[in-house]
Image 1 (spheres, rainbow, N blue to C red):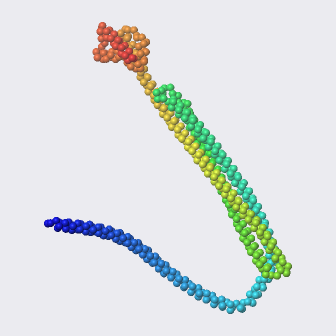
Image 2 (cartoon, rainbow, N blue to C red):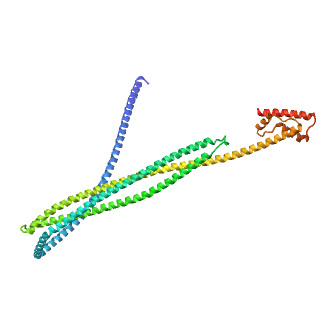
Length: 482
């Protein structure tokens, strides 16, 4: 291969590499375009889905609109049918009106005669209306005065009853407070006494010294506490019972008073409503008379009297309205005072209930004090029984010790008489008594020798044995002491 061919091949290779790189770039661009197209396709797909959803919602809305349109059509058909029925009824009514017009021409004379009779009756009523209305106005005035007097009396009675109830409730509350304070003072006093008794009992009853105890004062103190607690319980029970009875009676009387006040208020409301109706009727009659009098001539004296009396009656009616308004306001004030009195009574009842609860807590404290006193009494009784047992056991031990000491003393005396030796000094007797029943060792040895040999030794051996026994006994006694 020559150099030209080699160069040509290299040139072709470079061209192929360039074309290959261009092809790669083209492929990358195509891949990028494909990715872009894919993304656009995905976005278009999403937009298509949204469009489908919108189409679905529009379809639903269209269906709803069509259903509403159908319903509107059905309603319009019903309205059209009803309109046709109304038109038919109107036509029937027009036809009936025409028939009545045709038939009413024969009744004109009768109507004119009836109108004339009505006018005459109205003139007669005008002449008698003044007297009747004046009498009714006088009666209304009397009734208003009576109502006003009853209202004032009712207010005074209600206020006096409310004041009495409040005073009674205050007195009851003061009594309860005094009872509670006295009970608390007694409870504190008894509590202090119980604490002193308990402390004295605990100080007096020591487990190491039961011999010199005196429990009569503590027992009498406990009995006094128990009597005082029982007396307090009985007083509290009586006070609670009397308070419950008085409270029930007070509640009943309050209920009766409130019931009477409510009934009187209701009755006054009824009377006021009746007066209002009567006034409305009178006003209507006056207006009717005035209207009827305006159509007639005022030349006759009867018509002049009829025109003058309604104005006076109007003034009197206005005055009665003012009086009734004043009565209504007073009734409202009475109701308000009644409600305030009821609220005060309810508050007093709540306060009394709270004080009763405090009184019950005090009673509970007294009960706890009584229980503590009872437990202390049981403890003192147990200590006393234990003391008796200790004293009895101490007496038995003492008697046994004395018996043992007296036996050993007699045995020593007998041995000394047999040996012919003088009695020992008082020093050894004191030592023996201080040992509290411990027998000497030489006596035990002598008893052992007698039991072993059967007879006492004789001669010098016996004397040496006695001397040795005495020396050993003295040494044993001194060793026992020290």
